[in-house]
Image (cartoon, rainbow, N blue to C red; front, side):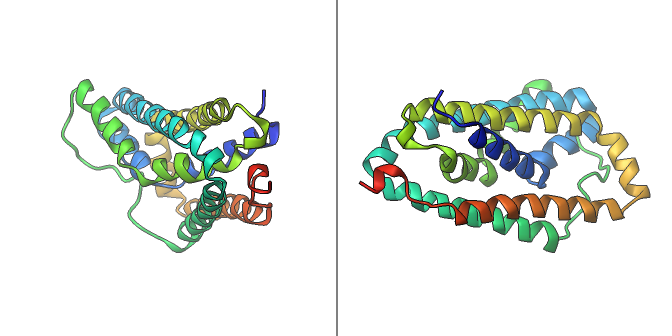
Length: 217
């Protein structure tokens, strides 16, 4: 398989940091879990999973050929993705915002609507778009061949990490909300750890030589 273990580990760390950074997906899934129960949250998660598959398919089939024809695009996406990670790291420690695990009264939705809203939320989520357009491509090495296979494998790793973490958040949303109400200082530590992980990967990507082998010829 052309994908190196370092690339798999790298995308797993990026996916972990991204999923732990509050965004549209997490807000929707947690809010549904708190207001309608964990089953509703898991049904919504099924919709977000389909959204990731749509992004993964479109990105891989569209970008794989482009990287060979226009190698400088690979470099541009690499730098853009690294800068976005650094931006998220800054936001993690600088931003406040409303409490993610604050219990709110919401209207109950059918399972079909929960699934469709989870799908729509993810398709309109800028974090998901940037993940597949600017971040995952950085870990693809065109010189190793099988670019599409690399993209689908790395995308599968990202989806797996996202589903596992979000499922744990959904199932434990009630307990987490109660815990954070008693220990608000833990929120600050969570933001710092997330920021450190994002910044570390972002800096490593900027330091790494950004030009692929196809561009050096």
